[in-house]
Amino acid sequence: MPARPPVAAVPEELMPHLGDVEGVEVVPYDHQDEQVVPGGGRDVDVLALSMIAGPWLKRMDEVPGLRAVVLASAGYEHALPFLPEEVQLANAVGVHDTATSELGLALVLAAQRHLPHHVLRQHEARWDRSVPGPWRSLADSRVLVVGYGGIGTALTRRLLACECEVVAVASTARAGDDLVDQVHGVDELPDLLGTADVVVLTLPLTDRTRGLIGGDELAALPDQALVVNIARGPVVDTDALLRECGSGRLRAALDVTDPEPLPDGHPLFTTPGVLVVPHVGGASPASLPRMGSYLRFQLEAYRDAGELAHQVGS
Image (cartoon, rainbow, N blue to C red):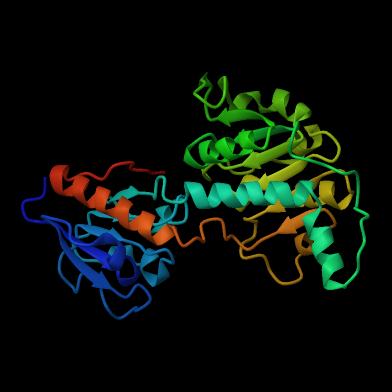
């Protein structure tokens, strides 16, 4: 437990949603100002990186006395290369579950109901009931949710309301819960992909999940299956996805891409059957208040035990 009340450097944008934390000195800072050291130059126990981390994500080793970092993102792989040794790291567990699962459901519905096609017809001021391919629905379809954590669970709850069958997949098999009868292990994917109408990826990017959905996995999917990525771009082999979607055999809806940001003119933008949105899964008015509540929880845990909850690592 820290010998003195901990100092927490908190981005100004989070201050209205955090409030006072008893026993913790909270020091606001401008996360975009490279000249102002978080914590005002004093030793900092906990550095909370903002929704847009700014320069301090890559300069954590310059923060005096840094002992712990709380990210405002669910993903954490981008922070690991810059994390000093012996510094604790926690990601934003639960903060973005609702917003990201909302977008995941929106992408599935948009692709299944041909909304991009209809939006383009509206832009042309044309009434055209034709669609590029068969009429589809989410109801009565089989959806694989690959990554059954907080976001995957929140998405499953929404998918079930749309009257589809959900098959949950996690790193290892385990018993089910109130939403699914069982959770399959990722090693079962080869047997599960062949029966999926939709695959939604919601898992973190790690060495194990990088390239998880490659050419063989995509080839195992039935014709006209939909791949939805709300996880991290490198979970999917972009070239393999382009080949399958470019041939017209598969479709995709992507909130994240590899590379990211997607360069202007990249073929994913113009490949038929591919819907791309620019990594906006967590963009919601609910994000800052929920991050404020989560940060309070983390600061109280650190104050009481000198340890963050939900620590992650390499």
